[in-house]
Image (cartoon, rainbow, N blue to C red; front, side, top):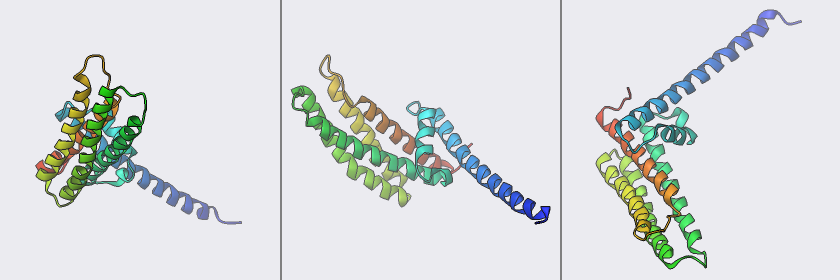
Amino acid sequence: MKPLSSFFLPLSLFLSLFFLIFHSSKGQSTLIQNTCKTCSKDDPNIKFGFCTSSLQAAPASQCATLRGLGMISIRLIRYNVTDTRCHIKILMKEKKLDPYIRRCLSDCFDLYSDAIPSIKLAMKSYNAKKYYDANIQISSIMDATTTCEDGFKEKDGVVSPLTKRNEITFQLSAVALSVMNLIKNNGSIG
């Protein structure tokens, strides 16, 4: 029979590891929470719940630094822009599509197509710590979402099939800009 102390050693090791893992993930969750709290307080375009759920759902966010959260937010924009462009392409295949909506979708397709190289360039600028350049590139994507959405509003009674996607891209962009601003100003959160 094994001595009782041989049982307690692995148990205490397990509990210590569990505490370290739990404590470190709680610390990262706190970084995300504090980052989103600051961002949503400073920018009315950012909703706290959206910010936290977006960043927490991203792979590697639980062990990211503030700068890492910035890159994660830019990647989320890229994924969203690429997916929205694909979604628009699918919508445009609809044969019975109203000609006005088709033109709006075509304009949005062009805007989102132009956004792909912009977000790739923003990633490069961000990695090189050229935050001013990254800011301009991400701001152009925000403008594209607004321009896309506004196109549908020019004709009474037309409802944009892209409203939610445009809002998400806009908010993700606002989060990225806000995180970059935090990094530029002091690199730490409240």
